[in-house]
Amino acid sequence: MRTILGSPVLWLGVALLVMGSGPLLVIGLYLQWHGDPNPNPVGPGILAFFTFWPSLLLIVIGLGLGIARNRGWLG
Image (cartoon, rainbow, N blue to C red; front, side, top):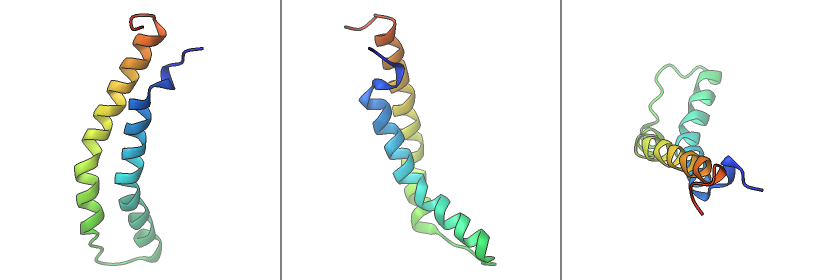
């Protein structure tokens, strides 16, 4: 059975989003919990900056491929 979420491109985009933006989110939550007055997570911020938009593009392309396969437009 074909599903919309069956495209490997979609899952690559989700993995890139989690691996790229996840560290910044974890550090931000940790610093918020412990009350750091001057947080400066430069490295994870740069990683998130360079992986966020490509991952969203891969997710949109993967969803498009999944919809096209589900409707029978692709073989």
